[in-house]
Image (tube, rainbow, N blue to C red; front, side):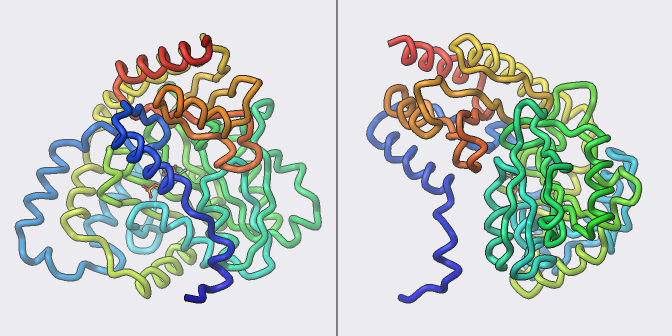
Length: 387
Ligand SMILES: Cc1ncc(COP(=O)(O)O)c(C=O)c1O
């Protein structure tokens, strides 16, 4: 079968390969500790599961759903957004429910980029920013996220000729994988740049609700003038431990939201209604649900950060997100270390270089295992590094 030239540019998805490697080792009897994926191990809220089941019993919900989601879901998202960020969205125009935020990232790129445009992409990055941009013929221009800059891109360093051709600026805070946390001043600078250079900002906020500090992550739409130039993606995957449900949303600039809705309705046929009802239930939960869940992650974070620092894998304590971004011991590259550790201990971490060149020298460690398992992983890493 002769595949398209596009397929020459699409690599296998790292985590699909990783899942296979893990399954092979488990089949061989190894007790694998998977700290590589941001796949919440905690259950979705009970009320959400009950709503899903009750809605699934109604035959009306077995029919094709609405292409752009139920009105009641749009309203629940708008009410949640206003409570959480103090920003008022118009339910029908500024909001599009998605089958998880990942597809929205790819569609948003397709909706604004032309072949030959430049896409400004922070490095390290979530892979879809690159594949979404290159699949329509755009050229990535990578903006390194360095520890000394608190993992924020240096927007003032982008050359004028690059800015002339640039059409999209991707952002992702709280950041995966670096754990960077953007202050208001950074978002103000980005929105100002977008206005000045006619850029579209696609802000991926999948980790909005996993936070540990008093200061909660802010939405770019809180910045004045942002809705003229920006869209933002949210996700119920990490927010309510609903990764398998596949539910996210695109919010912000209504022209782009509408364009993604048009694209999507030509490709898929909407979200199973019981999942939409379950999402409404989740969005109406009190904030105490989020805070109690975040306490669990906070304890795991502390074990991980302390453990990493105790074995010489220096890591900052993140304010938000599901990961610790730790330096690999000097004698290894990221991939060498991740592979060596997996072979020796059964602990599976993600090599930082899987997220781009600037991720070299780091590993990403996820908090999605119980405390005892995280402690066991740290003990195994310690023993392996000492031997
Ligand atoms: C940075 C980032 N954005 C988006 C996603 C996609 O999330 P989902 O499609 O489950 O909403 C992920 C998932 O891991 C992520 O890490």
